Length: 493
Image (cartoon, rainbow, N blue to C red; front, side):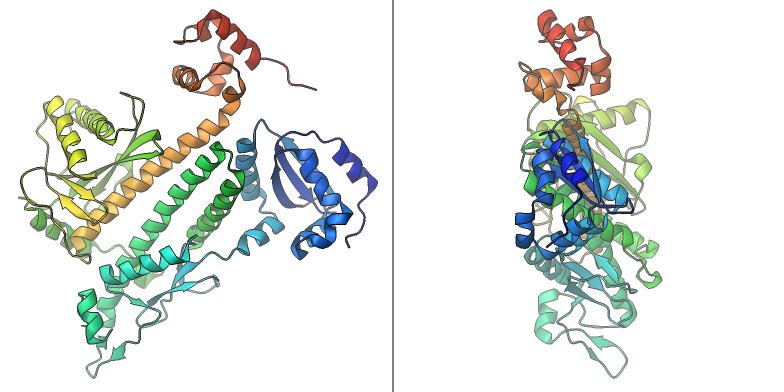
């Protein structure tokens, strides 16, 4: 049984409001040992000091309660805001018990050990302080194993169950004859050549991890917006664990994925595969991102000599319509981007890649026709089967999964997808911060969108006078006056 807490803590709990917020538990030295969120602060915090519950709690929670000597609380307007603030404070303070609870989830990771002559890709749930490289964590072990199986075919790598055999001439036989036919790679190879495969696979897996991170962030914010707070909190824990792993991922010299010669070969093969007259040294890729038809945004990423050129990345909010229409969105952003390049007399890329199929390609070509610009070579990359779609009468093309040309297109497409998802998540976060408008009666989604679009931020909206508010379409003098009073009402005691 935990020792009884001083009466001043119980009195402090009685004075708490039944409002959403975040609580910070402290030990006797004033250190923050746990941060939590609450729909109702008084109810949630009081549960920590109820003796009758003590024996039913997890031992780690009982240990936490025994350490509590004081606590602070921060009130917020809504549960979504509490969720975001909780995450921010956990990152800031790194409390012991938050870290322990998250680490106990043991999300699966991928481990690659450079000490092996033929490094293999293995699934593990424990990250050691060694020279290995770790990727993940991943929420679903089944999906992770399918990804590794795909990578084995795509890059010709070894998984943990392989038993390669050294040949008399010093080379290695990676698999038996049956597997050689399945995977389509040279089965007999040198350790040096094999490690080039490993470098490409590591780069691919790192890109997948970062792409998945942005998707998780967007899903977390969507769940919070729907008031699915348990799901949002679980996703947030996975996001934190993935961020920590990516931040601590160690690179080692022999696995350096930057190979100028390999990039040159990939560009050359891509040009040959697509029937281009010159090697495509500059590539641009467009991607549309939305979740359930909301927060529709787009990204454009630029690769130069096979590598990302982030100074030339662009992101777009859709301006010409409201709703979910990938074709119209693609037409808009392609037209906007290349109209500006035309007006600034900048050189077009050697190749444009559209994330999608024939419909998205048609939308992009329509945009070029509207701005009266002859498009450079342009293709679509349909993700389901990694099929290359041409804008003319040529049949779709499927390159081998281990083709350096296809791998270059995949890196380009995945980077565009990551960049679009990041922007989408940023907008959703901003929406949650501006949820104060959701509590004002008589203000529907259309008017809220109009207000935020007109003023740009909640801070500028608060600073506006009644006359300025009334200028927004659909508001009117009466509603503007009521909204102004609501935004400037004194906080309750």
